[in-house]
Image (cartoon, rainbow, N blue to C red):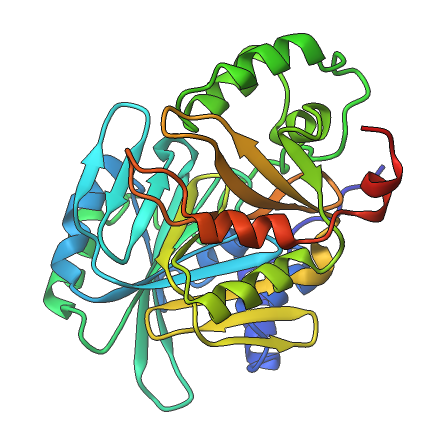
Length: 355
């Protein structure tokens, strides 16, 4: 099979000129390249390559002041306006634990970094820091706002400028997300034993790793006392009820290198075609509801009682988005959240199958 070569940086820049209104991500898809390829093609013009030294970079971000943090996958875009503060960095992970910007970061995934300047239709220059994984997919972006500190931004870019300022990046194919028929079958007894013994939801990742299974495989195998499939439309219905009740919720969207979290109420929810949008003052969400192949209500035991999540998956079994009722550590889950989840209709197949 012949693999088509990527377009040259010059061809990519020309395509940008020829399609001035097309979003960068959409243009990259049209050209058969990654977002990292697109950014690299503009190095030396409006883009500077920077080193993605996450452990050193994160503590510097607070000096930027108010910014917009963006994490996305193919089906959901999560945007939070605030300040990067309360940074915690260890050997394998990092966190931002601020009141607005709340992140769980996996530094080893961050492979390529760029400082990007783009002139908007109003003539204003918009600045951002953009980071990508080894496949060239975006893991996290930081967009400056009118109140951001430009001196701090310039100093950060200068300190992290990479020696390599070439206009091409080396990328690898995306990891396969399709089902693997060679994977061993889920050991239901071991899964139930480990799941039932959980005292903290964070133990779940370790269980998946130990058993060699995916999150979706665990949810679909565990049984109805811990997970039940919901009817189509459950996610919009849950969000509508959260608005009605003014219930603070947690909304999690992840890339391969970052999970971004909103904690608080949602107010302004608007559908637009296949998109379901939250347009609140410091939180924006754009969710492709037509990409949701399955939604599940999932219960995990903790020392404070069980914790319930709503989880949406695409056709590959990859997580699109996850919701919880907002809960303080050491406190039981809010009854209103449990009532909302219990009120959501089961998937017809789940209703007809044996318990």
